[in-house]
Image 1: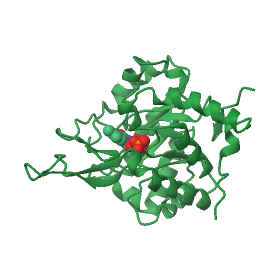
Image 2 (image 1 turned 180 degrees about the horizontal axis):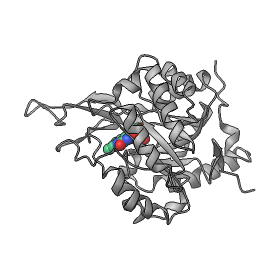
Image 3 (image 1 turned 135 degrees about the horizontal axis):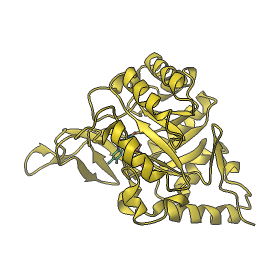
Image 4 (image 1 turned 120 degrees about the vertical axis):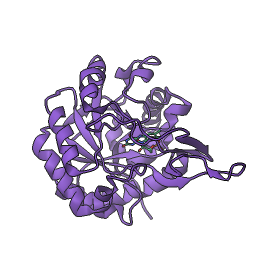
Length: 304
Ligand SMILES: Cc1cc2nc3c(=O)[nH]c(=O)nc-3n(C[C@H](O)[C@H](O)[C@H](O)COP(=O)(O)O)c2cc1C
């Protein structure tokens, strides 16, 4: 028996549910030097903005116990160069391409997504409403009405599925999730990083020039699982789970909690080919559990 790893999300067919997380593998070029990107279910590209951005000065990453902090500040090549060079590079691969988009105002999301609407290789867009490392943009992450408006405005210009990426840095993630669903989001992805800080006891300075950063990696997995579980019960649209995934066991946990697919982020810094290993191990797990298809796992958590 060969277990079926295919998943279909908002009408888009993925060979398997393992995607890379935005910002953790640039535009795929460096990963492509290590393995064939076509093995991935999909690749989510670094957030792009209207204009190129340099980001924050270094140091902008720091290691912490079971996780990392980053305050990259949305460094990216800007939408023009992204379409001309980066998207063209990704066209060579037989994998789904999800373009992550960031902006300070709703109009910026709309402007970028209108451009991407003319690029058939952008299978989906993922709206980053949740970067904790720039001053702008966080209002959309925290205000369900604004999130609804942002999604609805993008839906008018981008004819393919729209993912809204949620922030954990809110009082009630389900409220924002419902706002995005009301705006017409096809999919939700969660979570982005949690606001955190690290301090150097020699210099008495924060370890990031931005003072605070976003915490990611295994440290945030329990938070992410709880949020996926909560949002799964709050909305009807599919979810993509993100947060500390390093192994097939983590993927199974997220799928049981309601995720239809997952994104692997910080793990890529430790083991760039973690997704390849996870895909192989997932097949073995399904065989061991006598499951024919991975979709049999989605939302099957037996809660007490
Ligand atoms: C260095 C770094 C850069 C990131 N840049 C982005 C980004 O540009 N856009 C975005 O939506 N998320 C960004 N993220 C967040 C990840 O996509 C992901 O949501 C988060 O790291 C949690 O997953 P993980 O624990 O598997 O890394 C970044 C994360 C890291 C570690």
